[in-house]
Structure formats: C-alpha cells, structure tokens
Length: 338
Image (cartoon, rainbow, N blue to C red; front, side, top):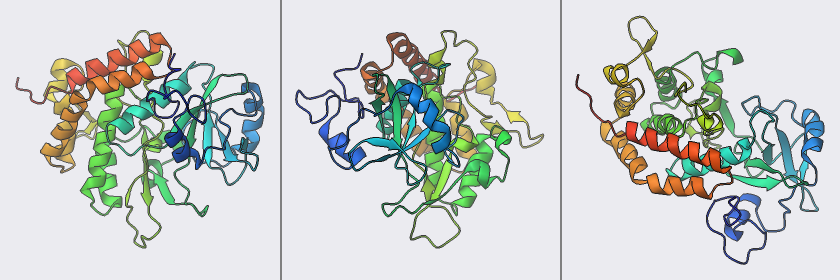
C-alpha cells in the first residue's frame, strides 16, 4: 500500500533516496536537511505515556491526542514541552488509519492551490505510521506569529465552535482582515474543499487568521495554512446520513436560522449554486469562484491518483474516491431554475 510513493508528497519515488520512503527534496523542505531519522525513537504505547506531560498548553485545535516534537542533536524527533517544531498525531483507536487519511487529504488541499500546512507520515518504532505536521505559528527565530482562530475572533467559548454559519465566519474574516477580499476568497475555497472531500469538521477552531511580523496594524494579513483536513466520511461504510458540512452554510437574514437555497431544497444536498450564493453574500466576484470550481473538475484525475497513491487501506481509498466523485458532480451544478 503506497510503498512506491513518497510519505510527504505522495509522488512516485526514484530508486535511490537518502531516506527510504521519502523524496530528498521534500524531506529537506520539511526537516531542513537529510540527517534526521524519520523513524520515531519510541513506540505507540510510549507515545500515549509521554503525551500528557508534553502537550499541556498547546493551542492546536481538536481533541485528538498530540505530541510536540523537536529535532534533537542526535537527529531524532523527540518529545518536548517547549520549543516544539512539529506536532505528532497517531491514529486514534476509534479511527484506524486516520493518520494516512489526514495526510492524503492535506495533499489534495495543496494540489488545489490552497496554502497547506507541511506534513508527512513517519513511523513509530514498531512500524505503525503516524501523522506529523510542521508548526506554522513559529518564526525561524523561535518567536510566535500572532494567530487567532475564529472562535477567539468571535470571542466565544470552546463549546460554541459549531454555533456560527460559514456566512458569518466569512463576514468576520472580511472585518478582521481589513476588507481583504483575497483572504475571504481563500476562506470560501476552503469551505468548498471541505465539502469536496467530505470533511465535516471545519468548525470555528479549525480556521485561523495570522498577522505577519512587519504588520503593526490591528488587521490580519491572511489565513493560516490549511490544517486538520480529513476524508471524514471515508471512515464509515454508510455515507447516506453524512452531514455534508460542520456548520450551517448560509444564515437566514430574517430569523437568523440556517438558510437553504431552492437548489438545496430540490436536490437535498449542496451544489455549486449554494457556494455561489455564499460568495455573493460575501461580495466576492462570481467569476473567481467559478474558476476554482472548474479547476476542481479538471483536477479530478489528479485527485484520484493522489488517493490511489496514498497509504490509506483499499476500502478507505474507495470510499474517499466515491465521495470526491459525487461531490464534483454536485459542484458542477452552477445554475438552478425551478
């Protein structure tokens, strides 16, 4: 499964590489050189023993158990309470192969031109693969970038991470970015991407804004790189009851409840019509959204290839491809007249 392909980029491997399973260029980009040993010096069970003492105070979203790592002087990835360069996430027992799933989803995000957190698959000492991502809230000098997730921007408690719509989230991004439509468009593309791959957990804690070091204003410059993306529906054989999206797409201007377009009411699922409606409400040019939708459609074979080259088990790959193919069909419906 996937052994001929790079555990970072999922591109086909050449015969000779410095680190078996990794392209030299990709490895250097992620780890700053080729000296690091990508095989972890501890087992999965040792991870769960070490995780609580090294993960306190981490602001990375989600409930999945994580471990902060750094490169040691002996070129090993070791647990650290401070100065972490990477985050390690094994597959939870309840979700086997979540690591391989998330890694594949992140590669699709990158393929579609979305700025995406650097990530890879690495091995525990007994061989099981785990998901590793490079921290993107740190500068080279070790200082932190100013970053807030949308839950913080809304000034809401953690339990309210599903309480707002994407329409409200987009309008907040417009406000906190000082009206940068490119940032709002980036957000909309990520919402469409989540729908495309069946990622139904893009809640307010999984969307963050960043302020670059030379920015002295109160406005944010950009969204942080995309993170915490999974083919969520691919874990389940029965996708008939899938929730489509984590939160409401549109808000009814009259009663404040969730709003559904005529197209949604007719089909029973989201189509391009719904995302174009969101774009209109966020005052984005229709043409730029249609361009992204067309790019997704033209990338269908490349997305399929990435899934095939991934380290997910065969059944999970099949479910992921079915989701993508059905969503691309839905995203091809650009107009609706009843």
